[in-house]
Length: 151
Image (cartoon, rainbow, N blue to C red):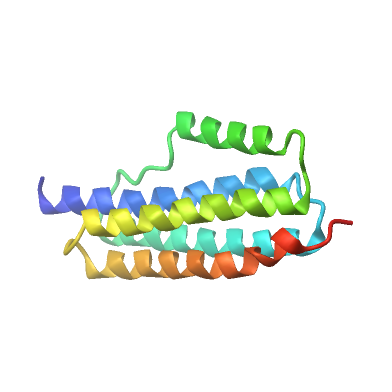
């Protein structure tokens, strides 16, 4: 695999991680009844969008034309997962738990992708590190919603 192909693969891994989060939040926020959780998820979605934009800017600067969002199968899987997970329980606790599980999966993906693309790009490592640390912080902000009294 040549250098540009490796760079593109690493960039797509980061981009798809951010796009998964953006879509998941977009799908689930419609089910949320707690204003504080809506606010938190909106802030998270904005930050993931900023990280996705960093990936897009990197692609443009490096003349990478095949930046790929998640395919329609992955998008359908996410949508179905959110709708099945909230069909019977739209409580703040359940939605926070679903978001935490997704966030943990995002963190695991960051760790694996960074290891799989070692020494490819310091700039992409920095974007990946931002994503990783942001997701770690999200855990601390979402945990209180597990114990928040439902109204």
